[in-house]
Amino acid sequence: MNLLKANNLSHSFDTELFSNVSLELEEKQSIAIIGLSGSGKSTLLNILSTLLTPNKGEVYLFGKDVSSMNTKELENIKRNELGLVFQQHYLFRGFSVEENLDISAMLSGEDIDVALLDNLGIKQTLEQKVTELSGGQQQRVSIARVLTKKPKILFVDEPTGNLDNVTSNEVKKIFFDYIKDQEAGMVLVTHNEEFAMECDIVYRLQNKELIRVK
Image (cartoon, rainbow, N blue to C red; front, side, top):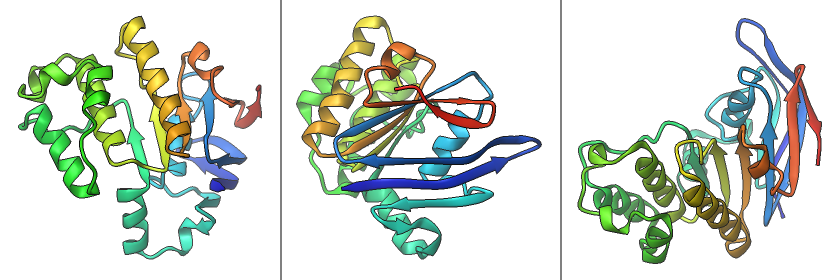
């Protein structure tokens, strides 16, 4: 099943970042986008995840053009079908880890996966305020919160940047196992080329073009 399709995307701020970018994401498939800082990787991810509107081109989610969706339809898809793991954790900072996870579980109607918390190494932090955690721990809570709602598409921006090597490998395995088990898809933006090359498809964003390298 086609989860995501982008046709001829172009976008600019002060200068043009990229033009005529196209890609498709299928179930159980992972796509990585690599490139230099400032090349537009995160901007492209924001467009694919509907946080930004492209200057030109179309984004399709589950076969439907995002621009044709009304506000309620798009919000339902974003809430229930899309999972965003970005460099900013966007946790509720006045709440505990457990409360942050409970909010996600309540909104999605899903139960918290205790095994997931154990794999991420945050099971013992449930009663702590998120402000008491390290940056790496907060990243893991953010990942757990996103996966709790069982999204069909993961949009992931530098998920292992604040993690040690052991935890990074565990997180990578969690993502890859998740998309296989849930028949989901993942679009990853990263500077970690080793992580990128484990994905099914790899693109490099360079000189305003999206070039397939795997």
